[in-house]
Each structure stands twice: as structure tokens, then as C-alpha cells.
Image (cartoon, rainbow, N blue to C red):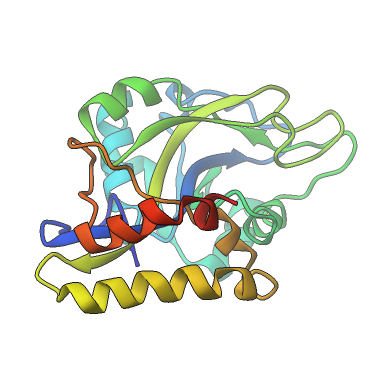
Length: 230
């Protein structure tokens, strides 16, 4: 399984889309940082630094941020302490919009009825996606982080990347066919243990898709589309 913006995917072809991951930049309650431009002069803790290296580079370039001074890799176990001690002014995480991960993110910042965290939009997401095809512009739905009033208080623009299950394009057709059929067979059985499997969908069949669809996987997906989307 790979993330569309990480590593060399030149030999990979998509079997299924497992999920999507969304870039969320969160500042603690009371923060005055409500835009990317206001991150200048502040430290942003990057959780999962290696995997998020490309998106950090993209944001640094788009918004004129000094990568070395603004973005700082931090361990997941240190994120809460880093934001509470003001070692960093905001956190960047790239996660699926599933309760397991959203709950983790909420836990990094203290919040209450009158102390709500701030989600920072990436307003240039559309422009970024035009040049960086691994990403797409995405609107985080109002109230994704809950809260009263809801956080965010309206749909919030950011970047999204795709998680793919891929096969090497040289891999034998029978093996890829078997793999795809197995996924179709067990997906529903695994939902109780791993709710993220509810997000499995068929990859794009467009000729200019970012990651080409493996032809054998393609034939099964096209014959059983409701099993992936239902």
C-alpha cells in the first residue's frame, strides 16, 4: 500500500483505492494563526515527517515559508507536549477523515465549549493540485472536529492525497487477479475490525490518471463495481 505523494511509483499500477488522507493544520485554542501566511515566524510540528516531506516542500514553496525555520518533524508521542509547551505553534498531520484519527488529533489540543482549536485552510490547494498531480483540492466538511460552535465553522479547503493498493506493472496477471478478487471477497468481513476499509473504491480508469490502473485488476473492478462502492 502506498501514498500517492510518497516514493517512486514509476513501476506501480493501482489495484484499488484504499482511502484518502487529508492535510490538517491545527493550532490551539486562542491562536491568532488562521491562515498559511500567518505561519511565517512560527514553528509547525510535522507529525510523520518522512512521509510528509513532499507536502511540506509544496507548502513552503507555495506560501514562501522558510522550510527549515517553519516546519519541524516531531514524533507522534511528542505532539501533545510540543503544542502545550509552545515548542510549536501548530501541528500538521495528513490523515484519513476517520474517527480513529480525528480523535487522536483532537487529543493534541485542549478544548472546551469556549476553547476551540483553529483549523488553518490551504486556500491555494486548487493551484497546487494543478502542478502537483499527487494532490487534489478537498473541502473538509463543517464540524469535522465537532465542537460547539463546530470546527471548522464552514467547509475548509485543504489538500488531499490518495492511498493505493498497488502492484508492480510486471507482476503476473493471475496473481493480481487473485489479489483483487480476495479484496472483493473479504472487504465486508473486515469492516468491523478496520472501519477504514469502508472507504475502498475503484481507481480512476481515465487514460491520464495519476496512477495507471492495473489491467487485470481493472477487469474485476469493472465487473463488480458495487462491491467496491456499496
